[in-house]
Structure formats: C-alpha cells, structure tokens
Length: 157
Image 1: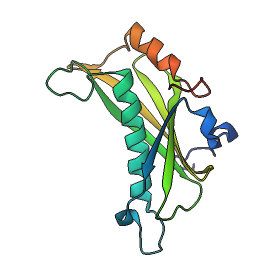
Image 2: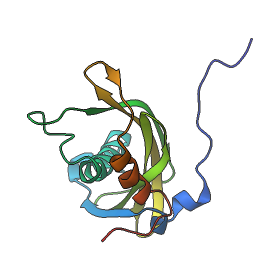
Image 3: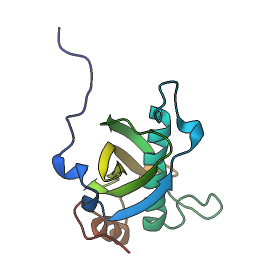
C-alpha cells in the first residue's frame, strides 16, 4: 500500500531570512493568542500569515476585497504551514511576504514570521483568481505586479 498522506518539504534556507521577502510589516502579538503552554498558538500564527498575505494581495489587486466593486476574487486552494519555533507573548513580529510562483490562473503567496530576527514559521498558499464562471487567467498587468514582489526581489518601501 502506498503512503496516502500529503506533506510539504522543509523550507528552503532563504525562506528563513527576512531580507528574502520584498513586503515587510510589523505586528504585535496579542495576549489572547497564547495557549495553555504559554506560547502563541498555531491558529494565531496562521492568522498572522493570512494577514501578511492579504495585505500584500490588496496592494497587488487593489479592489480584490471590495465586494461592491470587484469583478474577480482570490480563493485559497492549498495552504502549507511550517511551525519552526515557539513564539511567546509579548512579542513584536515582523512579517515578510512575497510571491513564490506564478501560474496561469494562480500564484503562491509565501510568507514568513520573524521574532527578534529568528524565523518562527513560513507559509505557502496557492491562490486562484476566480471570475463568475471559475478560474481566469491573471491579467498581464497583475502578472507584472506579482513579478515585482517575487521572493528575493528588492523590498518595497
């Protein structure tokens, strides 16, 4: 019988460096993010990845989250998270975001979380661009915007 599980390989070492991510932000951990073991729980960390991803996406697709004007939507088709180290409250967390891969109708949003310069987790999320009838090709101007924030690209200011 074959292995029926799906797992992701360990992250590339460049993903463990904040300077690999072109879009950087800073957030504060919340007291309520702690679990019974006194460290930030997995859902809180995943929420930080989601927020970093959404912040980047909003700059790349300006009306994507405005339900009154948008014509297209981004939906998640796959999400892989690596929890690499514990983080504790209080903490200032630097988030890094960039694009790992660009396809015809989808791209990979790649994020990292850093506490005091140490990577505590990375996440890769496949996002599909949808119209009313399903996946649609990413417009050329948006492909150019995605290319500008590829992992390893110079940081935006």
